[in-house]
Image (cartoon, rainbow, N blue to C red; front, side, top):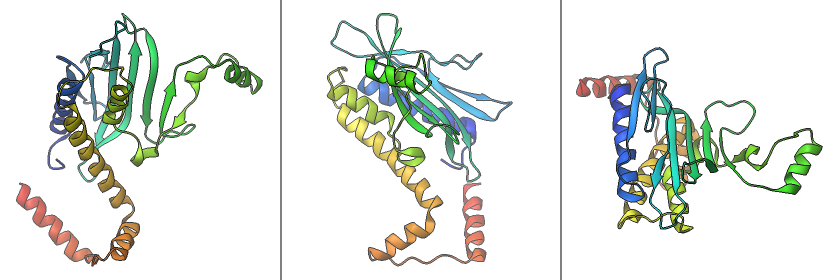
Length: 236
């Protein structure tokens, strides 16, 4: 994957996510991928408008009369190592005939200052909470304005986790075989997150491997660069 350009990586990821949704909880859902040439960012999302880069909701399968909708929006860049990296993601779940009522949304915003990078916001009414918010100077704020942490940059939930939870709560009517599809897709996501964790915590990773019986040795800089040159030559 790291050998592909940003556009190819983004389109491949959008297609994979579209396949997961259509094989589990959606019908005929479309995800687009558009490269912003000015910012060098890839925008991926449901029913993505190529002009303003805004997304729209898609309906998910349910036995209930009330309709349930999903909005997926994300922005990506290609990091120095060539990997597709999220700068922000948004997964919103909405209810109603015209998807007007927000139920909840997961957000991830890289390098966010005020709140935790990965968080969930849940819409709801809680009089005691609203009273307390007013007492601390947050008049007019509601439950949906609280940013509840969900694992940080590397341990945040996957979209598959969200879909699985909605299935478990019987809000969605999934297609046969959804368990394997969600499980395989989530496993791929987890491997990528683990790989990123290892790259940014190499000493810790090496220490744990040694403790569990692995022989771990760091290559010399000269040997590492030679291997990197061979790898790039083989890809060209």
